[in-house]
Length: 146
Image (cartoon, rainbow, N blue to C red; front, side, top):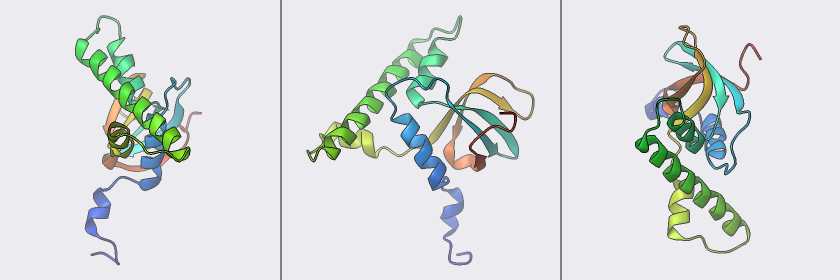
């Protein structure tokens, strides 16, 4: 323990950022534009637009000359999970009991963050980017060039 902090806390994602990403992942409509973020990951600065996980997979599957059944299938699956979680919130807020599938979709931990138009400080520009949320050591709500 370091000053009352469990060492495992250093490997957990920032709870505020994780909540922000989880809420974005529950969107059932496309994020146009996404929410601009700057992240620090492994000493590099990554900037881009936060978009829902299902949208990221859909955009990857739509890249020219990259139509891929795997990414298309993942986009559909993740979108279905997002829809289930969204519906679960409505059902729960109305005072009704959520289904088992809705509960699983709603309680799935958020582990990844998805950016569009990502720029990495090494010069990689305008790409789709997926990173492990627990690897983000810092973030700000807007890119420095915004």
